[in-house]
Length: 405
Ligand SMILES: Cc1ncc(COP(=O)(O)O)c(C=O)c1O
Image (cartoon, rainbow, N blue to C red; front, side, top):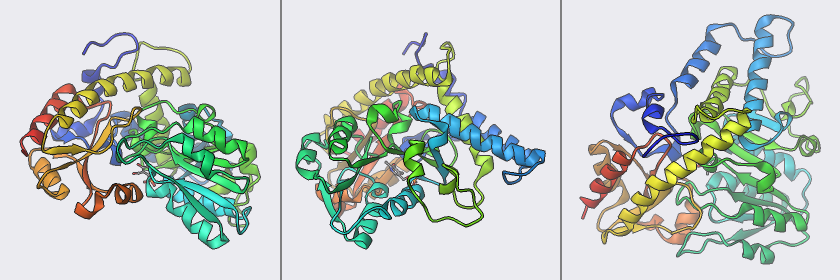
């Protein structure tokens, strides 16, 4: 695979990841990507100098302020949002719970919420639980069990003037499906509903844009693309201003600060900014603003990943003893499969023996796997490619899975 302007030089990229020195084949990216050296350095540099809380008059406090604003502006660039609309927190799950609780204060018995069977439980369970507390009706968007697609036309039936929120993923972390979120959001907005998009899996593979998606809230987790374990929800600051999350009395009431409880992981925020800079620099010959460079580099990541993934996917589908789940048209380089006469745990154990890191189970996409009937047999095995995986590795994956015949 050649490298040139706007193309990914995978050999160079691999040199940026100290974790690759373990010599293993990392096909476990959807559960958390490897971390580039620049991110490791940024976090340790941040910890070498004093950091205090924000709001003081001395240098260590100013540093904390800089770390927060650095992470917010990086994440805003990552998703085309505004830094003042970036709520930082530990992870997508915790932030979604916090937003669900804050939004529920505006909802009434009989209001409706629409969740999707394609989603990770992080974008289902918090909504189901607040819906139960408030007495709301929950409606489900279903997945086509053959293709693994989430058809957007079904939302015409699901949405009413009582719908308050539609929760949907930008990509399935289990089977890779990228639903047409923009088409779903358009329908949701027509009835005045808010749209909460889970971008945790998608963000590592495609450049998300809150406006293009039509997302009122977009949740992401930096550890999915090479950052530290920090999450964020990006929303319009005006929308955040309407919400009153539970918070301590002395804590700032400004937006987005009012959503961030307690002392945050300041040092990790340095790594968040570095991880976005890492992605923005993947095509070093491209110049421009960080968002422009991200646009070019994520396009290169998408092209590269699609090329190697198609080979993997086609090869696995051609094996009589392998069942690949779903065949969505738009997807990330992530797939789940089962092997005839082997439990998924057996397959992942055999892969681990051969030096491959791969997950088995339901990957918290429990509703999806229950609907597909794969949970009864222990779920599936997941292979997920990242921008540091090589064609050689894909060749090895194919050989290993082929050997389970
Ligand atoms: C699509 C998706 N949504 C949500 C989550 C949960 O993210 P977090 O671990 O940051 O709470 C994950 C993590 O696996 C995910 O892949």
